[in-house]
Structure formats: structure tokens, C-alpha cells
Length: 89
Image (cartoon, rainbow, N blue to C red):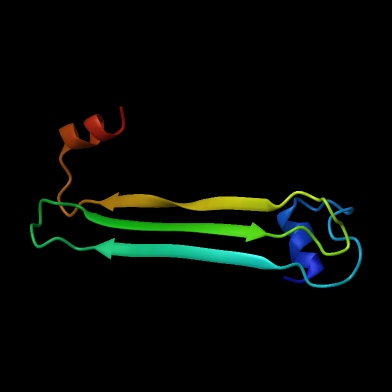
């Protein structure tokens, strides 16, 4: 990972990866869409990701950083008011 991307991921911290050089990282994600045959069952979509950086090589003892992100959506084909109220309360 370029040092500029590392600094951006750390919230613009100018001390993060101050010296030039790549920062080792690992990323993984999963995404899925479910379209059920039953029109009364909602479509489901989710996307989750995990991102991790090692400490910069020029900063021994610096902590490893990691992030989780993503979310889930339900999209009904037929909207029932009582379902909406139940889901959002």
C-alpha cells in the first residue's frame, strides 16, 4: 500500500508512514445478492470487507491497524405498511 493511502486511511495523520515505502496490507471481502422465487420475500444484498495493515517497516513496535465495513439491504417487491413499521421499530 502506498504511504499516501496509508495516511488517508489513518485519517490524514501526517506521522503515519512518514518515511517513503510501501506498507504491507491484507484485504478480504464478501458480497452476495439473493433473489428469492417468492415475490413476497425481499431481495437481500450484503457486502462486507476487512482491511488490515502491518506496521510500517520504518516504525518498529507501531500497532497494526484494521477496519471492518459494509452493510446489508433488504428490498421488497411488494411493500406492506405493517412490515415497514415492524422492521423500522
